[in-house]
Image 1 (cartoon, rainbow, N blue to C red):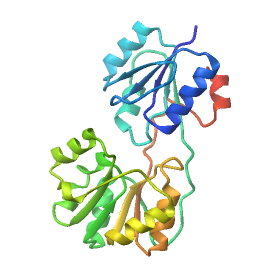
Image 2: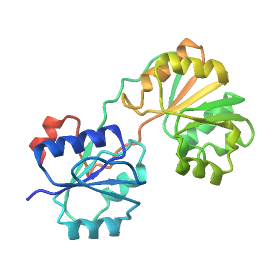
Image 3: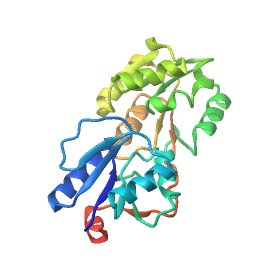
Length: 244
């Protein structure tokens, strides 16, 4: 009998949960923090290390792991890839965009090289649409320059910002928006550059890029991390149902 351990916390994670519900396939829905979940599967939350995840899978008789977490959840990606047990490991990828070729659009491989870029180009202010987990990564910049971070309006996000020492007055709350709403935000803040992650269609990357170009604001995009080669990468539900 099939039993799935599904790592979600994303739009595609919820979509896969709904899909498994429709197929009457039992599953456990795992997220880093506690979320409201209305699927048929059992919801759990918390961080699992390699050993803990391996033991959990043995105890629960897991047959397949589906990793539908955020593209930048690199710790989870590598934790699952280094598990010593032989469970089929599936990465369900969100739809990504072709790289935009435009003088205002720049891609970089990680946040360390992003910091070098900001320094070399002598940027003096930053609007970060890259999420709360990137506050600490960009600390060398905002300790010296003005910066704003858009984060989710929840206590856990505020706590992360507080622990990093980021000023509360420079926090903005909300989700990625339409192109027009993003334009309004950029014009209100008027930063010298934007930074975001290559988060694909669900992360509304296209709207961010379009808004940056419309306001003539440079945008720096940190590329999606490479997934370990132990994963079987799928992009459609049709591929998934054939696999499981």
